[in-house]
Image (cartoon, rainbow, N blue to C red; front, side):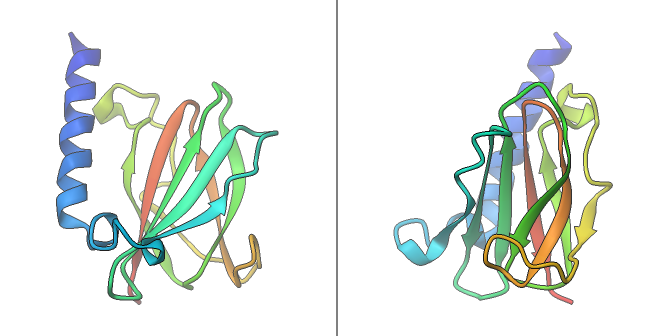
Length: 137
């Protein structure tokens, strides 16, 4: 069944990224490895956080949209200026989704948000998780 295959691919890709991305595993058991971006967006039913590795540039942003409504122009503050590549998007056609996303990634804008100096203008697909990785410039 195609949906079953999509879920298998998603789990395989997520596990692979967990193994290869230092921000997702290096600081699992210390507070420095995790930082909320927004855990209070109850009106839009979204949740977002940062994961960090030992290297200050090993950063991953994870954002969830728990509604069937896409969230366009969803601004999230980030600690580093530059390009954030979309490493995983659960709405990808590859996993059986509708293929709504961020075109492979986004550049930050000098617009403060969530107590951080830079932010990303993201699309959060419906009922999805997107994971963006900071790319050293």
